[in-house]
Image (tube, rainbow, N blue to C red):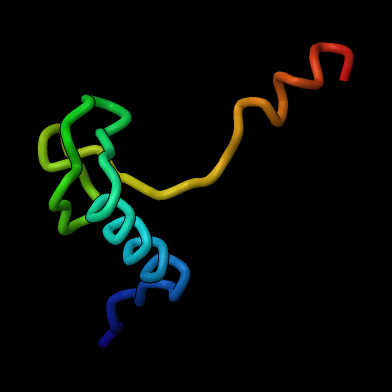
Length: 68
């Protein structure tokens, strides 16, 4: 009998961090703009999009210009 695959620790931590973030900060779904306040799963309750928390900066690539 095969056991179901286990979630990786990073996925569990990522989900925990995402839920903690939207509990404290106003955030909208990047797909449909639905408010994610009170989110209990890493999925938008309105459109069903999977959600993940990321850190990034548009300036990190665009500031260097096309001559990079």
